[in-house]
Length: 136
Length: 136
DNA sequence: TATTGTTATACTCTATAACTATA
DNA sequence: TATAGTTATAGAGTATAACAATA
Image (cartoon, rainbow over the protein chains, first blue to last red):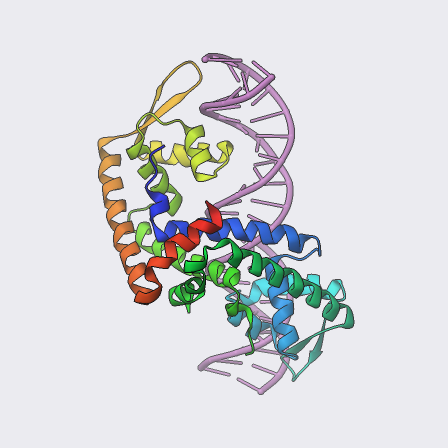
């Protein structure tokens, strides 16, 4: 079939993102985590006592949608909330949360390395800077 | 906030795809088209009498999900269906569909050019080949 | 006055299963 | 037996509006 779409960087960007996200989802699924769960856990690990609102801003997730996300992680005993002041809650990882986050990081780093390995060497180092220019 | 995620190509890929898709969606929205609508119209334009199933395979869209998509385009008088044989329907653009597809292509090509322009010159020509390696 | 956490809700997109008719 | 078109439906993800309490 005649298909000019793959010649378009924007189209290929979307297709590549979808394909790689699906592959990573399978691996994180073995830890019962979605990508967004792993992102949240990683950010909490690096920023103890961060608030849900700050996390949402960093990840471009609406405050309202953080609620069920964090509730699931808390139910599983992966994170804990403690009051910072009268209206804010600080988030932190439990011991179990630390362990699972470490495992998730291992999965992600392995996956990212494989991802880069798939890119022909002459293009490899250009991928991240090029992508950065498109969203940061 | 400490955030190691943007260092990961896979994460940046997802964020870049989401950001650029949102921008293109705004422009195609002025034509009352979603990205997937434009993709379908473009493929029909280049492949007259293509079937819904073949389109779905090319775009990785389930047969079942093609139905409401094509129904909307047909209701708007953009595409027409005519029997190829007893079980297959060939799709084609109406005159109005041709016109809107041409307009959509103009929007998309302009957008893609702007996208590439945002990428620093040393990285620009590496983006598409790198992305291709990740999904094709 | 702006922000935090929260609830409720609606909308879109996608996935799955099943059915009929035809190649 | 495989494929095309279709229907119905369920789930996930996301967006919006509104509210009370606090900074």
